[in-house]
Length: 140
Image (cartoon, rainbow, N blue to C red; front, top):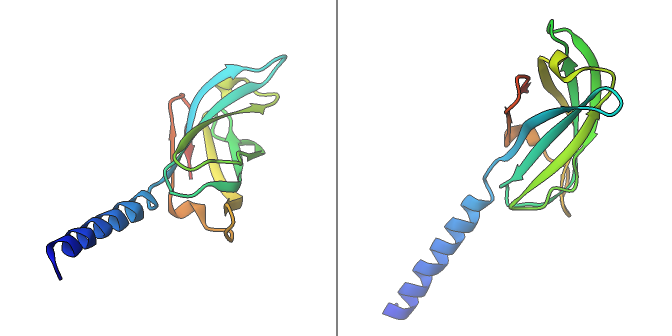
């Protein structure tokens, strides 16, 4: 093998390693802020950071909303698709008939859909990271 082909092989290996690591990142879901709803309820702002290396054409979450006493107040299903690759996406969801200050925790208890574009459904729990910048926690 000459110097040029050795150099090209090295570049190709580096490119493949970089591509593989870019595809193994997390899909982060952050509860970023609450605002009072109009006319009542609470508006929840979520940021989705997709560093998985894949776009998602299906991404649904089933959430349990816990009140100030930690009791399940309701279940809420949200559809956040599409989630483009290497992008941060803002989604706004209404939580009716509850004040934002009365939400102590939001629990992700199910993922009815997690489908990368042009692929079969996957288990998102493996690479999902949750966080919150509000007083309410967002947990699995």
